[in-house]
Image 1: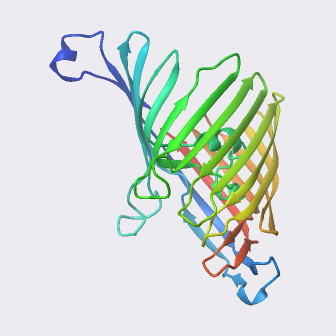
Image 2: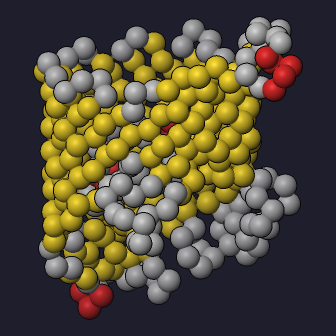
Image 3: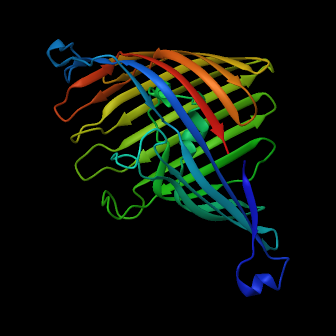
Length: 335
């Protein structure tokens, strides 16, 4: 369950009950049994097949987690129509003990901001507008099936602005200011998005630009996504295109796309997805099928199966595509 408490901040707040902050502690436990049969095909820098660098791992069963987390968020009424807010969230491994290297807390979100009639502004580690606008197919319980997505999920060192809603239209702007990057004085990267939400229709557009080190190609990515909710079903589609610097100084041409559908039948949700990724003429397809059963609003079981494809380049200039099967059986509980 969510724990909500009125935090009386110091003696001043104790004597002034009109000023208060509301804090919520929340989280989710998400553990899954996976069957993994992983392999990859290799290609050279020109996109030609290179079987000598293929990899084929032994299939295995494993209990793990991909999305267990705990967080705290809250707000404070500042008066005059303004409100301060904060959000901090950490991921942790809920299937291993404290002796493992990845058992500790890992920072997902940590930001604070102020909002009012003019919109909201925040500073810290945050979700990117690109992710919120474009990655509409990220609804799978095992996010490995979302491997085709090329954009950023979250980022640190971020300043953001979110506009108010204007009859379903809104805009968001992000700037990454990271002095350690030293790619460019001032802003190292920026992202702008526009969204439309009205009844069953949802549409998002976004553009991301990152200034790389001197002598390297800059990275940029554009994306568009839309969905339509028919009540008993939903259709979703998304597309990304641009140039991303992975290694070295020369960026790669990148494209990815995906279409998926959801069907709602009582407490059941059925899902199907098909998509593809292409980086510098090397392409890989992705597909997934899923079933989710909601015992309640806070507890669900799920079964998902597919081939989460993708393309990546290593330091040697070798491109590899994922071709392995993945079966997932899991249980998730929100608190």
